[in-house]
Length: 61
Image 1 (spheres, rainbow, N blue to C red):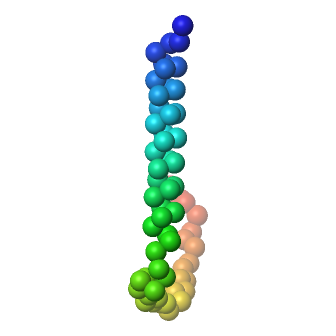
Image 2 (cartoon, helix red, strand yellow):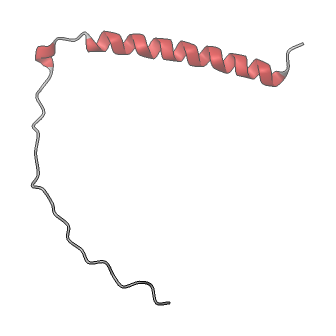
Image 3 (cartoon, rainbow, N blue to C red):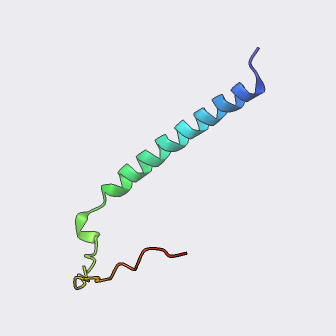
């Protein structure tokens, strides 16, 4: 006889597998859209930041 925990684990694994299969096939269909429809996103490059600091004296507590 199968325990309730094992039955729940089996149901969860079947649902998870089905969900992942559906999601991967849906993403595959969406990727095959024409490349011309994709808008180019502007890229902003900021200046380099240099941080200078002094090490404080040892803890004197």
